[in-house]
Amino acid sequence: MRLAAYLLPRILAALITLFGVSVLVFLSLRLLPGGYADILLGPFVTPEARAVIAQRYGLDQPLVVQYLRWVWAMLGGDFGVSMVTQRPVIAELLRRAPVTLQLALIALAVALAVGYPLGVISGVRAASRRKRRDFGRVVGAMGASVPDFVLGSVLIFVFSVWSLWFRVGGYVPFGVDPVGNLRTMLLPGLTLSVFGVALILRTTRDAVLRVMTEPHITAAVARGATPGAIIRRHILRNAAIPVVTVVATYFGFLLGGAVIVEVLFSVPGVGLYIFNGLLNRDYAIVQAGVLLAAVVFITINMLADVLYALIDPRVGAAR
Amino acid sequence: MSGVARIARRRLRGDGLTLFGAVSLGCLLFLGIFGPWLPLGDPSRIAAGPRLGAPSAAFLFGTDELGRDFLPRVVQGIRSTFLLSAIAVAITAVIGTLLGMAAGYLGRHTDQIVARGADILFAFPALVAGLLVAAVMGPGQASAITVISIATLPLFIRVVRSVTLGVAGRGFVTAAEVAGASTLRVMVVHLLPNVMGAVMVQLTYALSIGMIIESALSFLGLGVQPPDASLGSLLRQGSAYLTIAPWMVLSSGVVLSLAIMSVNLVGDAARDALEPLKGRPLT
Image 1 (spheres, rainbow over the protein chains, first blue to last red):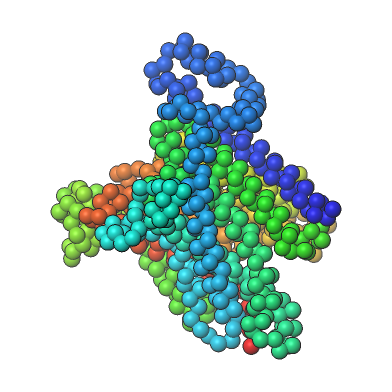
Image 2 (cartoon, each protein chain N blue to C red):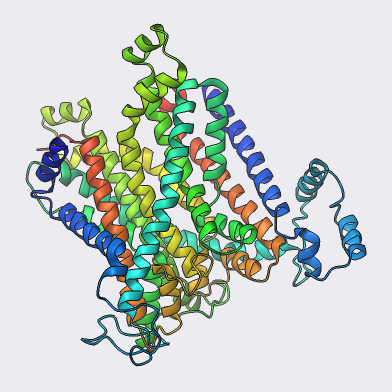
């Protein structure tokens, strides 16, 4: 019951956000210079042809009607048709979604496996009396500062000179050739993970430090508990809560399309599809892609709120 | 002012990383601001040296495919990357602070509308939003500024709103209200000074996010257009010759990373000074 009282406003807020996002995407593409008819037919368009297009696509209707029709079509699974291939956009997006998902999972796994432990160590060290070199700050500062396309370019350079084991480009699905798949996906995944490593490290470090200001840590120290036991029993779990939020936001962004890494490594994922759609002025792709990226982001964050309530019993109880 | 300088000096002593960030930020800003008047050479002079020439004493960063000296190009890039991001973030900071204060202080419907608006903007991954903006506005500096604003506005709104919520309930605000101060006066005289610290910290982070977004968009060819150069567009230019002339990507990439890192380090120091976090030692 309390859980419902906590979750309902959040679900409602997510729905409102979703509505706002859809209106923004809808309006922005109606604002395109020249309008939809010009884009379809090119600049040398006769008024008659324009009228035919306007009628076929319902552009002569009031905006509200157009919007409602658009939403209704999407609820029925119609996200528009690519102008280049004349195939439904949603089919291609769904076909490419697993590629981006794999990339995001690799990046997230690396970011968590490296960032969380480093963050805990760095936080505990920052609180300790002995002044030691705080490598966590160095890693955090560097990871948050080297843009993924810079790192990616350097990696491509290094691995094109000494090919080693990795391969740049030439994606194969995991199901067809697992080793070949990893040879092409690990480099982009690692590139993508660096910002996540820094993000999770810094969040964890702050969370650990914040937990360590609380009285129950002092109490544990006074009881004579060993540092290891305090970290395991009192710090790890409490510090995980803000990390969950950040992980959700990060994962949502990754799923929304790791545009630049996919372009750089020619990984045929969602981001590359949207980018190519833009280059081809195939705006149905851009529209559907941007909308779905935002929908995924909102959904993941809502799920994180649920997870939050499950990890931290105080969340449901306080409201 | 001397107080700020004293605190800054005390913080910098014994903290090599922050010192490094402050010094390199100072150098980069100097290059960015005074670059056009420094004797570094002309960034647009074609055939100043060999085509795709490797770094040498005459051309420290080598030359590009048109024989242009790459060092002044990078300096030009520093200038436009900082400038574009700073313009975008300055505009966003003003709007975000106003909206955040209004949401936190006026509450109720204003709060609901502003908070939802921030959520809506936040739901677009920055570069995906960049593709949409580029589709609508066409590639260029204006779209870059718009994308940076979309990405950083929610950050300002959220931080300012939460700080305002904490301040708005305090005694001096209530006293001002009882004394008959107008809503505008309370916000400008009593709330604004109290949120400024948080805004300054957020400003540095937003600046580094802005630089990342600007260079990413320019790298994709959606931001700064040739013959203008930003660090991102230089990387784009260099990546075509990555294997035969790697110095273009390396020099602009290292400078860009350094620029972002120094802004981040200064931001970290500002945040630590504003809200020191000292955990209890475990032994």
